Image (cartoon, rainbow, N blue to C red; front, side, top):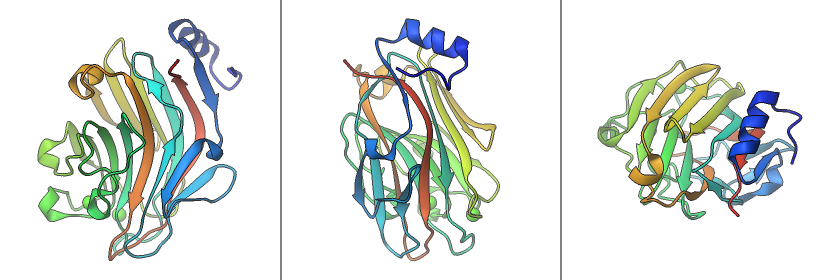
Length: 231
Ligand SMILES: [Ca+2]
Ligand SMILES: [Ca+2]
């Protein structure tokens, strides 16, 4: 176990709470699907800037939601704003399984699941706002009428920048928080293990992305992953 990169208090509190912890940062820990490919030591390119492709990267060790986690990555959502699509979704699911692609971004139709989307393309029939947006969504339901949080509009995400993203879960408080570019953009309070996963706390997580007629290269770069491993 490696805690050197962690603040001491966080490391200690997680150490006493969790049966096992991981804090590592290797793209080799992911199972890639579709168009996804390793870009360099830190980054996976989920999609190239090519029409109608999709890619997924699943972290190969399941995590236990009875314990806290904090996943810190950089998102890159490409450089096409008006002509860009579709975005990236972080998916939590009992299996390393990818959902419907295209506007569903590899999340649609997955049950049971929880998705955190970073959507850069407006699909009117899904209730998307005109601007880029963040949402927390249950069970592969891509329409925002079903969203648990959001859609929350954010400034344009498609300018080629690496955008720091931290997703954290505090099971004691039942709070899921999404920080993008250093700002809290979405927060959900509820017993996700019971409400979403039917009492099963052991889930996989992955990032999926897609393009359509409009395109962007879309990357996820691993910074720091802290979570409780399943025994
Ligand atoms: Ca969309
Ligand atoms: Ca945009």
